[in-house]
Length: 256
Image (cartoon, rainbow, N blue to C red):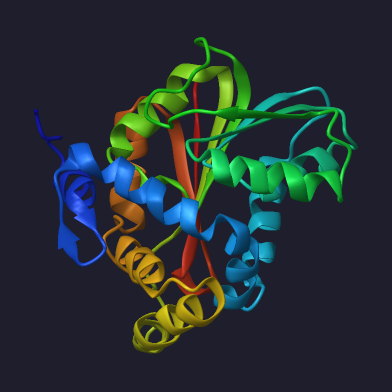
């Protein structure tokens, strides 16, 4: 197997929690994590971020500014949280596909959506972000929120995003990132090390899953490095916006 040339991509491809693994095995290991926590994934997001993830997702939709009638894909969007926001923003006038490799996450999303929104504009597809099951130039916009760092080869994920977007299409990625506020980084590290795994143990009954999630955040490329990777895949006008002092960031690129 040929390793990716970029050191940031290579490091993430081998990272699984606090251990290095064969990249060929990582997808199965990650799928197991999300199979175990799918039923309490949304609750855990609220607890871990104190609800702030909702504001971050709203910021993604604000920056995307989706117009009515678009075809949109939300990749690694299993529970449909971001997809529901986009559909609501267009008053239901959009075709929104939720694509996720975990069938259990998709099922949790469908079950939740039945109680919250009309399903007319939502489509659920089980698929791999590194080999999307869609033809070239299928969508006007693409989002991935807190999902790309769980993929084995993030450069391939971005290549696939470029492939399935139409000319003029927009790529947006919301992901945990490098804290830029002095002092906040130390507080955030303590919170990640001591609090998040404990919440995972008590609420999701799976400490190891949340140890993995903390380490996956630490191994993800910082903002400028990730922006460079997006540009290498062919996207233009690559920009990013820090959220909450860099705890999370939104990256944007255009297929021109």
